[in-house]
Every structure is written in structure tokens, then in C-alpha cells.
Image (cartoon, rainbow, N blue to C red; front, side, top):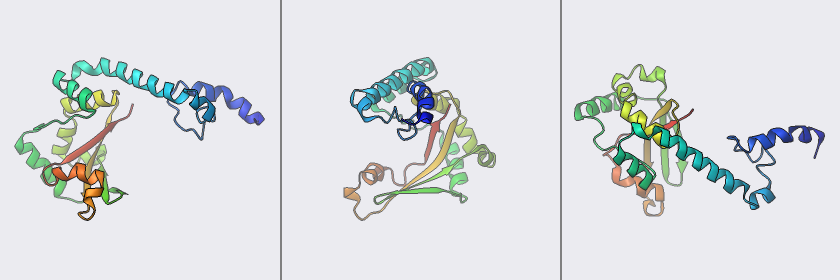
Length: 189
């Protein structure tokens, strides 16, 4: 161990109990022997326990049936979340313009996302109204176990017809083709 590494060791040790994730940046986290002995499993279990405790504090803001669905399935579907007229206005805002998008290909599936920062939402009043909905934000906070500001995206999943039977993401999303407008989100603290 180099002298610089010895000086950094206390910091690396402290990071074990924090949110550090990089095995490369922290040789203690990346130590194969410690991980064989259960360091990584223990950190994952601790993180899940902490998320459950945070979720408990956020639970009262979410409907009991929605909490049960999330606990059962690991995701939440909010059917008929908005009324038909608001949905029509939302579709008009989204489909009536072009956006700068990010794209990722996995096999024969292309996932395209459009970030929705405050500056863009300011030009999309109906979309802004939907993403600022209290019940949607309560669901996002509960699922992420964080009370931070959600980051929303418009997401499009394109599944190429050829080879669809061999491509899991394509099969999962194929039934929703043409029937669903997806607003994806994540919370950061």
C-alpha cells in the first residue's frame, strides 16, 4: 500500500456506511476477499432496510392499495390517472413538437428519453400540471424512498419487429404499443 493509500484508508472505511458505490474508487469496497466474506451483501441489506424505513415515513401520503401493489409487484400502475380531456391536451403537447432526446439500444430495442426540466415544462402547461400532481409525486417519493425532487422524462420504447420473440424488453412492452404514453421519473435527494 502506497503512503497516499494509507492516508486515504480512513476515508475509504467511512464510505462503507455511506452511499459510495464505486469498487474502483474505493479499494475497500472493491476488495474481493471482504466481499466474499459478505461486505457487499451486508451493504445491500442495510440499504434495503434504510429504504424501507424511509418508505414507512412516506407511506401515509400514498393510498393503501397503491402501497400494497408496489410491495407486491415492485412497480405501480396508475390507471386512468388523469381525465380524458387532460390526457388529450397532454398528448397534443407531447406529440405536437419535437424534442432533443437521448437514445439507448439494447438488442433490437431502442429506448428514447426526453428529459423534462423546469425550463421545458414552463412551455408545456398540461404536462407541468400532470407532473406536479400531488398523488403522482407521493407515489414517486414512496417508490424511490426519497422525498427529493422527481426528475421526469418522456420515454419511447421502439421494438423492432424482427426477432421480437427473442428480445425480453420487446415482449414486455409490445402489449402497450399505441395505448400508453409513458412519463418516467426518478427521485434524487
